[in-house]
Image 1 (cartoon, rainbow, N blue to C red):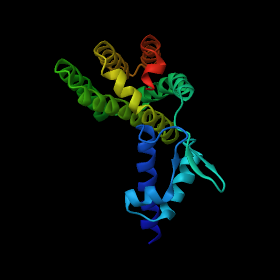
Image 2: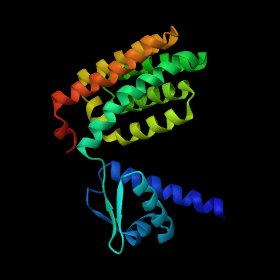
Image 3: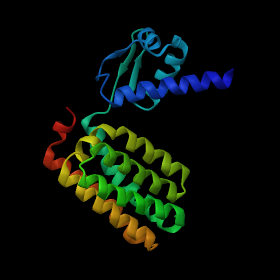
Image 4: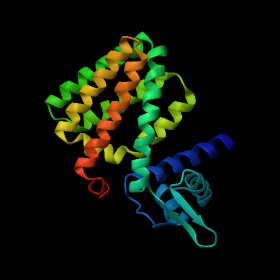
Length: 219
């Protein structure tokens, strides 16, 4: 029973978090336990527990005797996350170059190949999915549970903005080529180059957002 309870709480947590990150709930909007519970078909208890966990993540602010309100992800949060990712993605790629398996290398090469194919067809949903798979594979290859956990969270927080940027043809093409360079460095077991390519990938993303306008991406 206890396991089922925690599983239910986790499902409610992920559902609310997804709705916040996708923009269903806006900043400062009140999250009413009863309404959410009715929508998800659960009691208030797992909703209350999920809101407390979301507060620990900084996505929700609970005011005693008033309720829970959306903090969301601000423009400054997004900028900070990208700057932090510049360092952490580089570290991840460096470790991956030292620890990646042959099977993982082959998976990365297939992802790049498929990305080229779907780019030629302008299949943007598939490109986003493949982008997710590429980064997830590098995270797995670094073989660091803690670093992977942090990068997965950051990647998830940026899902909405990443979708917008990857629908821009020039950026999508450049991103695929940057992934190819990372994969080649990993295949060569060149930790230094892998780190440099991964950092450049994030810096180029930041530069692209500077051109587009960060405020436009948050709309």
